[in-house]
Amino acid sequence: MLYKYDDIKVLKDQLEFVDTAIIPFVSADMDSGALSYANDIELLQLVTIQLEKQFKGRVFITPAMTTVQSDTTVLEQYEAQLYDYGFKKVVIITHLDLGEPHTAIRLNHIPLQDMTNDIKFDLVNEEVKKVMKTIISIWNS
Amino acid sequence: MSQKVTRRQFLNYSLMGVGSFMAAGMILPMGRMALDPLFQEDAEGDMVTTSVTIDEITEEPMQVDFTFEQEDAWYTSEVTDFAWVFRDGDEIIAFSPVCKHLGCTVTWAADDNNPERFFCPCHNGLYEKNGNNVPGTPPTGPLDQFEVGESDGYLTIGQVVPNQLV
Image (tube, rainbow over all chains, first blue to last red; front, side, top):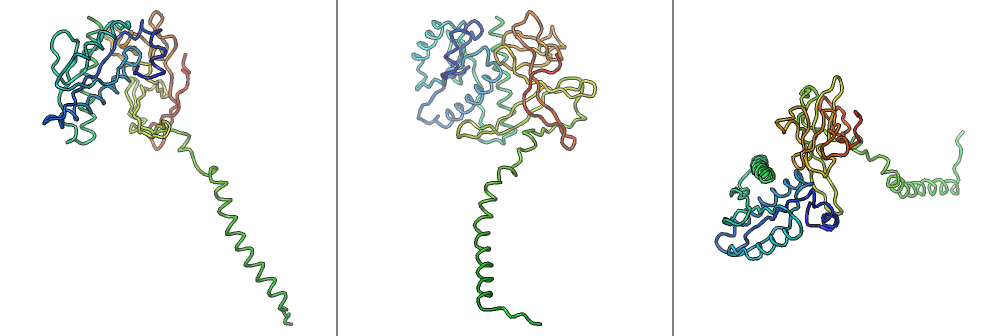
């Protein structure tokens, strides 16, 4: 499910099944790393779209949350809100190193812009599979 | 015997000739426009040709990708979807991979304990090979099917229809 009108309308009734919230978390610093952040955001978008397709009935994907200077205060507030709403698991997908209290899945940095579409597709799918496996193991734990 | 054409007749004929050309010049494009929708074929009834030949399909369900154009309001995008395709006797069966529970994607034989069933990882839903949902698991109905066809030896995939096997 996604953060959109039709989905949120039925979300409350389906919390029994949709028990996992996923926050895509990206950095948008406008410094020397901007090029690589832009690339990371693109990859994260591709991964979340695929992920939503695969796990539509059990995950709720929030809009991508953007930070600067790796500040995680808002992220922590949002996590708390999602737990309060009734989600049992809140998983963050990101390229950043968040450290302990968060359940986070870290993606690889993949330079998508230099690749042909086929290779890009393969690499993104690899990444999606990795994320799916981690999420399944989070569910089974 | 030479028949004389009078000045009046000559003028009549030429006026009629020129007039009918002008009328035709106006009416033909209009008629063409009005009839045009009849000539626009719906790409063989919306069947999408895949890159898999009929001969390749075995009794083991395989993932067959297909791409089509989807219109969301004013935005047209290319969408890649897939079906679980296998052979059942002479028939080709194509199942939609969308779980009937809450819409996750099901996989063939992904659960080690159920090697001959479709498995949904979200809430451990199970389906038999004919698409029927296994009682006691969350799904409430059998998997949907795709219409299938053949075009030059290649598999074509059409609309989603309710399961015809159970």
